Image 1 (cartoon, rainbow, N blue to C red):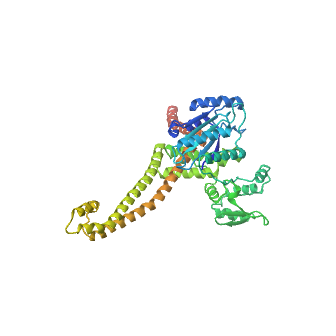
Image 2 (image 1 turned 180 degrees about the vertical axis):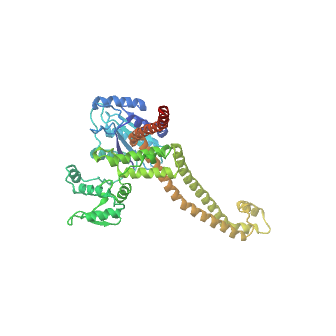
Image 3 (image 1 turned 90 degrees about the horizontal axis):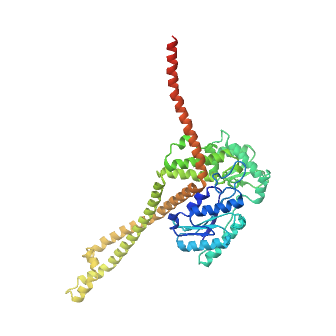
Amino acid sequence: MPIIKHIPIYYVPKKFLSYVTNEKKTEGTLVTGLNCSTNAAEVYEEMKLNFEMYAHERFFKKLLKSETAKQRIRLHHYIQSFRPGEVTAAEAHRIGVEWAEKVFGKNHMVLCATHCDRSHVHNHFAVLPYDLDGKHWYANRTTMKMCRKISDEIALAHGLEVIEHPKYKAAHKYGEYQARKDERSWKQKLCDEIDSLILKENVRRIDDLAKELETKGYGIRKGKYLSIKVKPDRKAIRSYRLGDGYSLEHLAYRIANKEREMPLALVVRYTGIQRLYALCIRQLQMELYRKPEKDRLHFATYHEVEKSSWMLYFLKENDIHSMEEFKNVVADADRKVDDLKEKRSELMKKISMEEKLISEIPKYLEVLNRRPLLAKDVRELAKYNYIKDAGVRSEKDIRSHKEILAGLKKELADTEEKIPEALAIRKSVYDYFNFYESRMKSDYDILLEKARAELEELRRAEEMKQERQQELPERSRNSRHDSRTAR
């Protein structure tokens, strides 16, 4: 059941190509280049030459957006994911290359790489926006629909399942999009009203916001969702349908933070990767709170801030300060699941053995008590040596083995209960790790650039402050010396 996803790469394409071709992720062999090399450095130079020829811009780009204009996409990043255990890495790679050839044709530069370092095998595709003749590839709903259709066709041909009725849900309907663009949307006016009310000093909780909206003449109903009725003859709208930042959770977050980013003094208390992540969150908040929507980074949303905040909390709770420590937490989660499964397997073997022993004790005792013991009886007793080794001498021993069996079954039940919890924890740890790794290796690169610049400014300001503090005693001594000389 392969799933296709698209992510535009606006900046640092070289770093992205290095990530895609990482030998630890591809087992060193699962990389194929269509009209390009498979080495990251070589394919970068090849794609750079073609891009700059037709785009008339530098291929390398640090910033996502300039102050005046939207940047061109440097690379299209497509991801094709498979369910765990659905395909082997080699088969996933064959499917990926076949998909790339059918979607992009024979004239496009496409780097295909299969990563098998996760529980699920997945393909990465780095696609240059211009083909060898300069024809531009556009990533939109039409091309995405085609990409998924071809992926499904190939999957069926390989005997895989597909999602027969995929659901698509746009952030806004086209009419609402156009209304917002023309500045005549009542939803946008409601958003603006909510934005201004959140900043009021007396709005400290969702209930306060609801009261303020009622004062403004809106009909309010609060339960699982916050529903707002703008006009008596208009149906109420749930706040989350207004867009990013207007669900109950995000409104509560905005009220609690009052559009203030994390103080830099708090950020520098963290160490290692916790500090790096806190710096990114601060930069995300600054993008979100200080810039109009059209000028923000494409991933600067309340949803992203919320997920990133939980990520930082996870790092802090698990005392993770480096990637090595993070990998150890992942390995520990894997080990706990494996240990529980191994324990379950051992318990099931012991239970099976005990059940067999209990069921055959009467037959063993019957043969044992025969008098006289004939040669055939001795041969038959030899079959029950495992019962003899278990110390069974009489029927009284059946009761003790039944107690052992009951204890084993209870231990098995306890182990069975722990496995789903361990699997859930492992999934959570994997999700956090994948989220952290994907963000720090792609989206958050620009945030770190800005954060380091801010830290450098802070460092210089601290140095200047220390210099001034050192100069004050010197000036004071000179002043006292001058006054004594004058006397």
